[in-house]
Length: 475
Image (cartoon, rainbow, N blue to C red; front, side, top):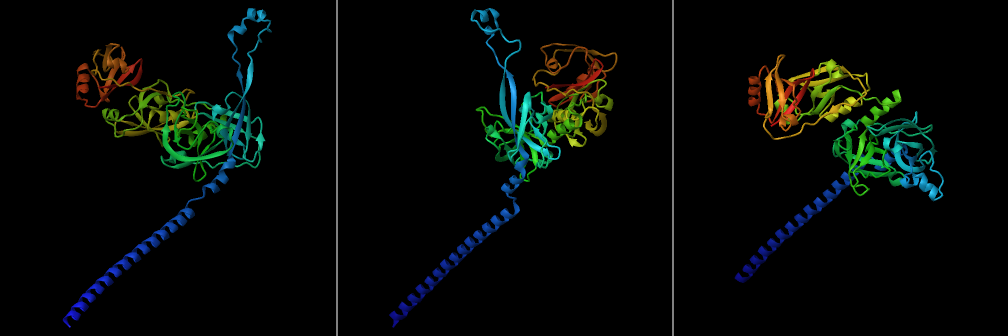
C-alpha cells in the first residue's frame, strides 16, 4: 500500500511537470507565431504604404522624358597639314599642285542633349560647349521628329549655357524647380544621350553642392551627383523625383574617359538667369561691383571682431565703382545680395556676375558688429576679381620700415621683398590707418595694437594711391 502511494505521488509530480513544460512550449510557440504574423502584416502594410505614398518613377518619366531632346552638331575644323608640304619648292619637286590659299577643313559631327523649357516658344537649353562653333545644330525629339538648323539664340561659355529655338508644335516642357532648396542626399535622375545611344535615364544622389574650381575663369556653382553622366549627356536634364528640372548636366571627372561617379550640373537657377538675359537682350552682360574679395575665414572673423564666420571679405574697393558709390569699404563682409545669402567670394562673384549691368541690387554686409544694407547700381561688363592671401609663418612685420604719416596713420617706407609682409601684399608708400579696424595714429600705437592681437591673422587697413584696401597678414 505504501509502495502504491509512493508510486502515485511520483507519477502525479512527473505528470504535473510535463503539463507545465508542455504549456510553456505552447505559449512560446503562440508568441513566436504571433510575432511572425505581426511582422508579415507590418511588412505588407509598409510595402502597401510605400507604394501608395511614393510616386512611380516610371509614371513620372513618361511625363518628363518627352521634354529631353537629342542634339546632333555638325562642325568644321581646320586640317593640320605637314609644314613641309607648304614649301613651294618641295611641291614643285614632287609635282604637287600649289597649296590652297585658304586652310583646308573637314566636317565634324558630335552629339549632346538638351531640355525644352518653354513649349510655346520652342526654347531648348543645352551646354555652350555642345554647340560652340557649330555650322548646324539639329534637334531630335523623343517622338523622332527632327528639326534641322535650330536657331542658336545665345551662348554663354562662362556658365556653359546656350539657348536654342525650334519651330515645333505640340512640345513638352519641364517644370522648373528652385535649385536653392536642394540638399546633399536628395535623389535625382540624369536624362540624356550618352555616347549617342539614345535617350537614357540614370539615378543617383546629390553628392555635394556649390562645387567650384573646374575652371577658375568661369562662373561655377555646380551640383555634384553620382548619377551616371557620360559624353553625350552634356546639356541633358537633372531632375528630382517630382519630375522638376534642378540642373543642366555639364561635366564629368573621367580619368578613364567614362563615368566614375563624379558628375556636375549647372544649377537651374543659374541657367535660367542666363537664359533670361539671352531672351531679353540677346546676350549676357556681366555686372561689376568693383571690389576685390576673398573668403571670410574663422580667424579673420576673430581678427575683425565679427559675429559671423562666412561671407565675402572686401579687400579693396575701386574708385568710382558701384561699391564705392554705395559706401562699401575695405574690411566689410558681404553676406547677401537681394536677401540671397552669400557664403564666400565665389558666391558673391556668381551673384554679381549673373546680374545685368545697370541693375540696382541690395547689398547686405557687416562692418564691425553692425549689419547694414545699401543699394548699389551694378555697372560694367567685367567680372569681379577674387584674391586668395597666401599663408606664411614668419614674423609679423619683420623687414618693414615704418614712419609717421603727414596725413594720418603710419607710412610704410620700405618692405623687404623676401619678407612675409611683402608676400601678403604690403607695399612701399602704403599708409596703415587701422589694425583690425582699430585706428592707428602713430608707430607706437600700431605696435601696441599688433601686440594686443591674439588672432592668427591681422587685418591692416591701408591707403594705396588714394584707394582704401585691406591687407591680411597671418602669424
